[in-house]
Length: 225
Image (cartoon, rainbow, N blue to C red; front, side, top):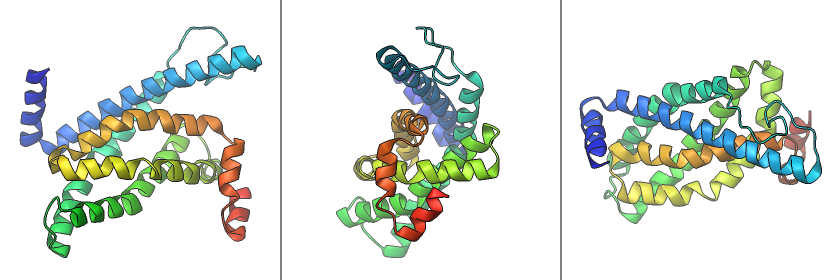
């Protein structure tokens, strides 16, 4: 394991962008395998407890897990094409921007807090928007269908993730060197991909409707149709 870590460090030093792209793609692909496994187990429990009719995405009612490798490939490509390159330049650029623009002492409380605020206000929402849009189009959905899915899933995911990711990013920006910050995020994205898959599976669950009820009336009408 130590030799593998040293090999990764060397690759990151010599080919930083390529290394981030490849590692992001592999981690997101593995994360989708985990997400499908969790979704399958959840569906099995619901099927046995409530005798619901299983669907193509949740299994056929038996205990056999059949991975959707097409979805794994699409999710992995999201890691390769978006998370890897965009994440690399985002964390490098964010660090340089705050150092040069605000002249703050690195790793100081104000420095970390500013990073967390900008990351949560810009990159977090963008990442969710691109993810839900990409997965919808990759599944062959039309623009109106993708738009409705984003309306349904974006706000609940943003609110729920907003309670966790700032805490993770405080540790990331305070203790993790900049070149390794995307790897840190990707590792937690293993859990995040399971969460996002669960969000999609919930469709129009009552708790999503409850969250939407707090939207201003004009925006609420837009979400409802």
